[in-house]
Amino acid sequence: MPMTITEKILAAHAGREKVEPGELINARVDLVLGNDITAPVAIKEFEKIGAPGVFDRERVALVPDHFVPNKDIKSAEQSKQLREFAREHNLVNYFEVGVSGIEHCLLPEQGLVGPGDLVIGADSHTCTYGALGAFSTGVGSTDLAAAMALGETWLKVPESIKFIFDGELQPWVGGKDLILHIIGDIGVDGALYQAMEFAGPAIEKLSMDGRFSMCNMAIEAGGKNGIIAPDEITRAYVEGRCKRPYKFYKSDPDARYARVYRYDASQIEPQVAFPHLPENSRPVREAGHVEIDQSVIGSCTNGRMEDLREAANILKGRQVHKNVRLIVLPGTQEIYLQALREGLIEILVKAGAAVSTPTCGPCLGGHMGILAKGERCIATTNRNFVGRMGHTESEVYLSNPAVAAASAILGRIAGPWEVL
Amino acid sequence: MEIKGRVWKYGSDVDTDAIIPARYLNTSDPEELARHCMEDADPAFPAGFRAGDIFVAGKNFGCGSSREHAPIAIKAAGVSCVIARTFARIFYRNAFNIGLPIFESPEAAEDIHEGDEVLVDVDSGVINNLTTGKTYRFAPVPPFMQQIIAAGGLINYVANKLDVRSEK
Ligand code: SF4
Image 1: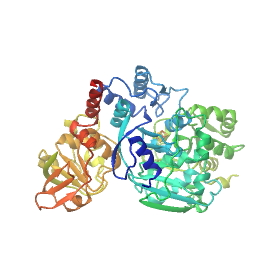
Image 2: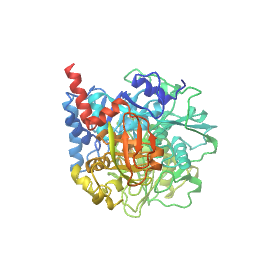
Image 3: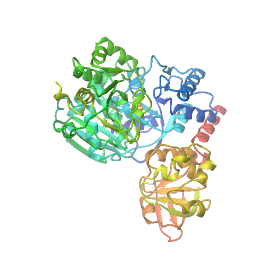
Image 4: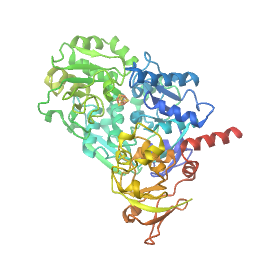
């Protein structure tokens, strides 16, 4: 029977020949993940189970990233719970401040997720790893607790939707713009329960970092997972990096889809999503005159090497507008170090950017750049809900890094073509 | 397993704030949460409720936040199960995990009225409307999912499973 890539990975982890959309299955997990917000709740539930230990000390990843370096006493207590649990259970993949980063940038970089894996995490953006051709999805804290004990989880097999991008990407258009375009088209519940499979010539040429950005925001359309069939670009990324054997799956040509969307990539321009929903996306060219107070470049959506290179390329030899604070947050320590080696950090600092240690920080209104009442921010993050980055009367506009950098220079939402 | 009860009927997109208002999230005590279940969305519910009653709702039941407090409040109030056209994804997981039975049946969600008496045969996947005599089907819950519900939730289920393993 023909199957999609998502169905094949789920079947393999359920020990089955085939699975069908709508079925509930019990599946083996290759990795489980918790952070400094969700893991404390999961640890409490885990203790109720009375398990002798975690199912595999190499397959439970705990990443304090949201409020670190700890912004206050409460967040310090939460991180401490993770640290103590990690010590007690001798976890291999606990990542302390200084060697860490944002979970969804860090785990692929560290080779902890590979093609064909099944990963669950108590964080909604766990769907990011679909970029590697893995099935990954966000769950609740109780799910995390159970999976830490058993090494398996229950899942409902999703229907798949296919998004095909024909044609060539225009300059300054990346994965972020493609996914914002999709969400603008289908809405924030347009893929509820469903697997979002991205394919076509434009996706085949998209870089790994661009693919991570796309799959990261599947949840913003209500999707269960985002996924891209692994290819030579994936292979180049995972070879020598992945700690476990991996397997490439791809959808059968006659696999069944709930819906198929076709876009001409050459018609898609850089996007900006207006407050207060990611579905309010439109071309930057049509944004009008929107002055900004802050620009944030970072997060699990766009805090990777390619993003920093793109931003530095635009900011090189230029200055951040006097009315704007530009905050740049490299996704991991590795990315930070590589940006230093390439001279990007110097370019950014000279331009007037505040460069932070890796953290979620302002993305969820935690710290490192909270907005005051009435302030506006353009950000490379993934959610622009009411109050997401601070005051309930502040505004967040979502874009790619080149647009966020150009806007920082001009003090208003702007395309990179306006400064170069 | 059979579930029998009287129906409270709701519309589409009942969100987690409607199920348990955010102002009560400073506790995770099930009894406390149960007292405020549906209090904003349906003021008649807390007073008129009888243990074993059933919720029937439209699409996207439980949308909004991922708070496990929502299914906990419904379960602790004594609601025996929820039947809906569809559930929001995280609510769906959380409900099973904390041991609240839920069933997706577009026909039942459409056809059943407030106050009807309903009998759910969980094993055969049939909902009987005892008031009108009509029946509706839902995809039967697989055995291991029934075990989660029978165990009273995922944590108990996992604990039992580990006991069995260690006795082997
Ligand atoms: S960067 Fe933002 S979206 Fe990503 S994990 Fe952190 S808080 Fe969540």
